Length: 233
Image 1 (cartoon, rainbow, N blue to C red):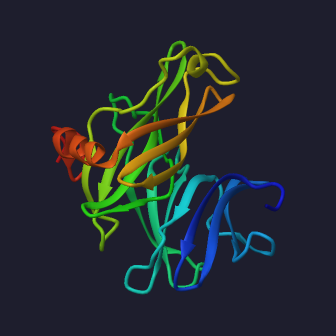
Image 2: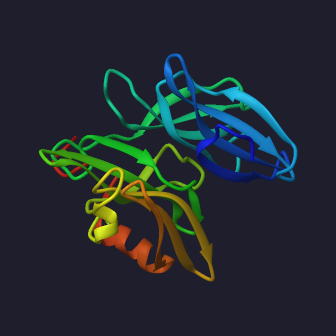
């Protein structure tokens, strides 16, 4: 891998027959989402920044929608940190920007939200695993939530879980460089099992396991249709 690649997420793009690696680089304006492509992880093409800073937590979907690529990312706009989705015909020019998952005031994900692993395609929709942050008097708590997007219209949220599914509990999740953090960034689905890789306290890398069917069942039972908190229009 090239150097200076942080917070990377890798997807295979069948139409281009290459891997796309979104990552965070740094500019004078702050962190920015950039793109590298490769076919063999020996030769790489740097495409540069995709969207303006400040932006993080980005991944492409592993297929196109109506001929357009879709990018999930987390810009900071007016101090707000929501998850957005944007579209491009060529991986260079991006538009049709819209908020996908907003923070939820008063909830466990009220301060910041950001994508975890790349979107996971299931029979019921695109499974999103994301981190949510709640600022407390003793520091920020980073916990993990779930949402489900429409397979053909990924800007449409089918359901968003009300409760978090993974949060700091063990000593190694509370004691480290940044305490109180469970930060998911990688996932593998094999034989209907979900293996979720996450950082704990910004010091160690951990893995959690679940049956994919149980994860989707949890979303059906705990999720809010359309992703909005109860009582919101």
